[in-house]
Length: 292
Picture 1 (cartoon, rainbow, N blue to C red):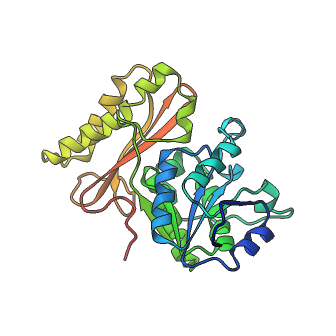
Picture 2 (picture 1 turned 90 degrees about the vertical axis):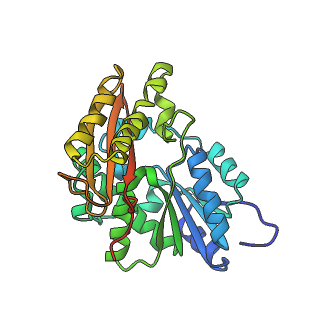
């Protein structure tokens, strides 16, 4: 943003606007809830490579949690997160208190339609309303040219793209590849809650997705058979408690009978109190491709 400057941390809307008033364009945004890991670092590096100014937000959004206990349990360490942002060369970090995001009297909800209803939308009612509301606020305040999200949350990317299109928000929503551990487990801030045995068992998510992908690559087109393969792989792990497995259209997320075009494999699994999600695209689409 300014020559010789390091990462600046601001708290209020006014400070954010002032800091961005003379920012070099284009501006790239990396929205986060903190507890940053290598997946976030990858988003930041992509943003740095494509923009004149980079902004990261650190805000644990209470409106996207279905249970108050999940909100309070979400890991937090702002000093650690800011250090990560500094190491990645982020220009500006907005780390607001709740009242700066949702001022007194705030009474608006952004609710996206069909794409937000299945999968995570069905499992976590109201979750995507909270996501769409906070992201619309972030897009409005930052005025970013591009915003970067992880492919691990494929449905979230699709919801945010729909929201941005429908509300005529000019921010380009970019999905970046999922960053994984050597055993395939997708990086997630929630992984910190896994006990040692649960952490080993959690690799079953990726095994299940890869087993279904392998069958698809071998010519299997029955969506039910692909779902069965994922379910069987997960239930073979005693510590895994699957919530859902899905084989859905890669654009609409409607469940498929047969996979004849782009599709998205996805699943949600609990290990004790920790709930993890993951996905794998099939075909030429990636599950996050916007409609023409």
